[in-house]
Image (tube, rainbow, N blue to C red; front, side, top):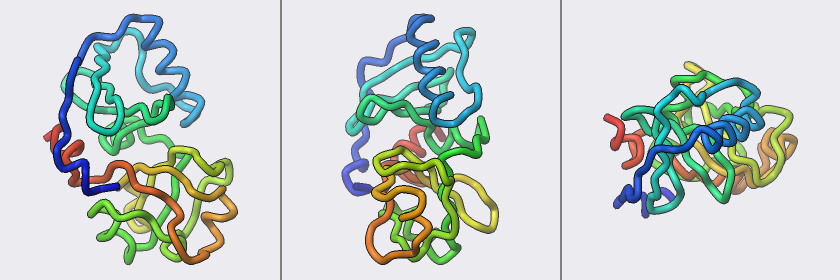
Length: 167
């Protein structure tokens, strides 16, 4: 998954209408249980290579994957949610920050409300800071089981083109 982010292109960026921002804020509240964007924010939506992105001012704070809005790593750093988090051990960090998928044995903890197919975010066990966003290939119990194999398909990580687009 990580590889083809190499050529991120951002097209058709335009300011969102209030009711669309409201719907976006609701989708994010469903995922994270907190308030993020509001109608008073200058929110833009744009198309990119793998998913739609949304900006708040100059920063890419979120993405929409298969119709579901989620925060980017930058958005996670700004709004600091707790929900949908998966914690990995320090051994997994270099792989995940290089765009590798998350393997079961590297997972230390996972939000118990995660279902298979949910968008989730990944943090390291030492600093608890977000390092990536991906799609859960197992439910919370499966994520915590340490079972071998792919547990999360990484969509976006610290250091990728989407992250760099915000520097």
